[in-house]
Image 1 (tube, helix red, strand yellow):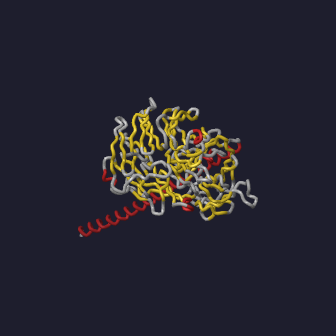
Image 2 (cartoon, rainbow, N blue to C red):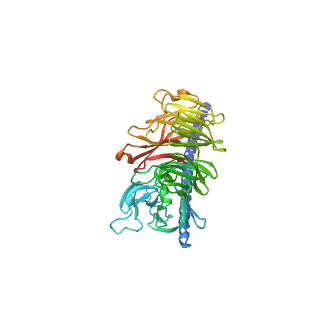
Image 3 (tube, one colour):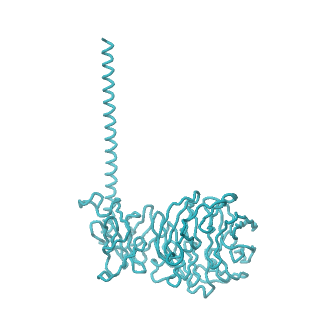
Length: 521
């Protein structure tokens, strides 16, 4: 009897223990759910507080007649700074900036929407009607094809909680027009704030695509890819400098001392602030004063060099003016590289080594077709067909590295373009174009050239210099067009992993740009 009683008590304890554990698990689940709801409520409150702050800041700007001083990049998007120091923070991909293109179309975040800003229905000169229909931005009732996203990830029509009217209105669009920045809100209101004539958009985190231009139709141009974006901001130089143009067949650019030196084959040599793209200097008709432009390199704070179709010229930087021609060098000269006390210059079939202390030619190498790069180990590299040329900058001795049959650094034998030869800043390796293939030479390992790192999709043409390697993340960035004729208006910007060759991003954009060279900021 005692044994039976003990068993019953033991069984009862087991049942009670089981029930208690289920209750505990249930309580834990409810607590976790409550915690998630509290976190969501906290995030919602923070969002509403941020929206309200933006709205109050804009109202203050309107009431106190403030102006927009600048637009700056930040980690998540960009910050609009007003004349009293107050700011509005906007997140990339959520609030588009609408502005006018040179062709009269509306730009959305720098991308041509294809929709005219002026028309027959009395819309000329008026602020556009911007709406969201089924998740897409509409301008004056016409679908732009650009998806709209609000800060809450919805289609942007309402606040985070819907239509109850109690939420702070979110900014759904910004229009830059006639010197004003017009902020449009989710409650169908808008605030217009004048922009200072000196107000700027910054280009500090990304890359410039310098374009030859549509020959006979347009001069050269500069586009910009902003890190984290999925679009190309077009004609950033023209947008920052209304009425100013680059030269014809813009073929090269380089950043030196925070200035972007833009070299065209014909017309003006132009200098712009690399951060704002505001023009800081130009030499009109440079090709007539010297010869057709090719490339640039800086030497000192006050002096640079420009290669041309007929030799190399000194370029005085402060103030900008054309200097003397370097003695002993004639004919076409392409890439220039300043390293240690030398400037290396690639001419047709030659590499000149110029001593920047004496301006004498200390060494001349025969047999080179193009390209100059400095590898991570400090060696200087060039190319001659299917051979890589390694120059020791201390001894000026050259070593030739033969590549496998069929592998060579692409070279334009008809007109000068910058070479694709590029060096990694992250590892001791070189990259170059061979047709549609991109090879990686791990320095010292000939087997690394047995197969390409990657091949761009068929139906494309790697155009201009074609590639450059991002010094920050070692991605190889490639510019392509689809071909000649109307196919030349179809452009792709590819991003490949510099180690695995995996495609990371592909951006398609249109127009007859003819990309010449990529310049990282």
